[in-house]
Image 1: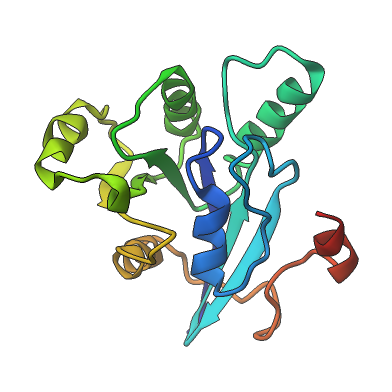
Image 2 (image 1 turned 120 degrees about the vertical axis):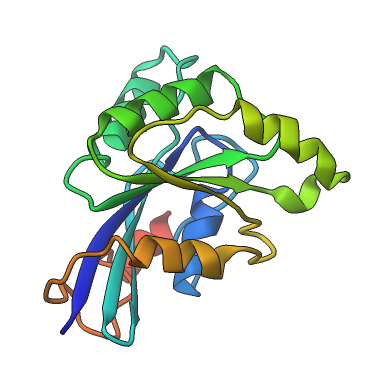
Length: 192
């Protein structure tokens, strides 16, 4: 019996979506930088372990403030990747919830698929008790499967996130060979 599922990693710019993909796959596939909108193309990261293959899709950040044509195209790319997946991981930054997060949450909750909120960068919060009011303000939804506290940079909480996602992966044949990490060519990754 094999399991194969597609998981979209979504959120506003600069919350650590690409870092999360790289940590989950164990390779640097997606470019990371402090500059927002570094990820301009959806990138697949393929994780094969035991009987399970999970295809993670790193998307451009979703935001409401950009009015330039590039921003509109990136928003469309990100929102399109929320459909035809099995699970969505909405990545937000610890202690930050702004209009872009609200927009990303709206798109994810309207996608019709189960999702998790992954609160990233928890390692940057000095007093952990300050997290409680922040977590209490996060919106709920009938398809929200849980809120996971993670630090993609420090690889904290990722095992629990992976196991939670794996419970929603359907029984299906693998889509890629066991040793493949991405569908992108080496040339594309070098250009990124």
